[in-house]
Image (cartoon, rainbow, N blue to C red):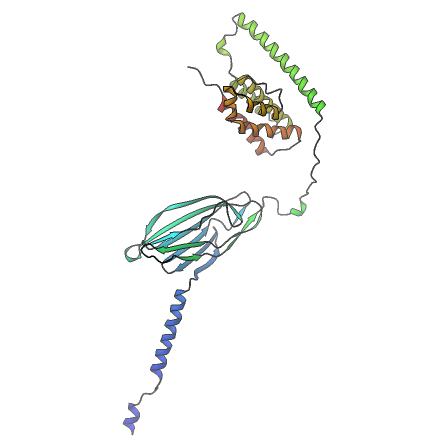
Length: 351
């Protein structure tokens, strides 16, 4: 009786239960491994957001350069896909925008190898350069990456990232309630009679000055006191006048309208001296229209820089006639355009 009792198993169903339990565990693990869940959820580090995913043979990573930017800043977004050598990857292509951002540029880097032995992988990398327009919360939508076996006729598989929210901060003071928003100024009427009077008076003074200068020049040349070699070219005169104007520091003293009136006269007189066109006596529209109809070599050279000239004259007209108050950066850009136009259209040095 005792021998029979000892030969019987203590727990009759322990082996069967153990086998069933192991089968269930393996089944759950296999289901989990087939589910394309991210290995790490999106995180906002000191430098930006990061996402990492694993699906089949694809390891996908997403990184941003920052987690928040200003309206004047740029955001760099990088997608990296690591796959075996026999797998090809296709990143999403965007034209003008990516989510709420404006797409300024995109760059696809050459593939590179990583790992060793059986773990060799090819890393594909694409970089998107993004810019905001206004402050607020910007959304980067889910980005879908396609991958497939080069040696197989089967359709490719896809893996999508998660949406990311990026904060874009304004450059204004945080206390926006203290910022007073002024009403829009009504359009200013341009008194044609007064403008015409200014033009006539200016023309009279200009003609008188040119006549006196021409008379003095002829007298000195005839007396042999002013050799022709010391004559300054139009671009030299214009650049000297520009340097004198900058030395007066009109912008620093707040005399913005006078500064733009002076720099406009410098460029208009340069055009008259350089190309023989009556720029000082013409309005901007009249001068640009006449330039479009002219067929001379001078007008051809000017026409090639017509956009640059139009931007300069438009900025000066806004200040002179519409009471526009440009920023210091805009005024400095006007100086750069003036200098650039003179350099691009100056006479070629002889010899």
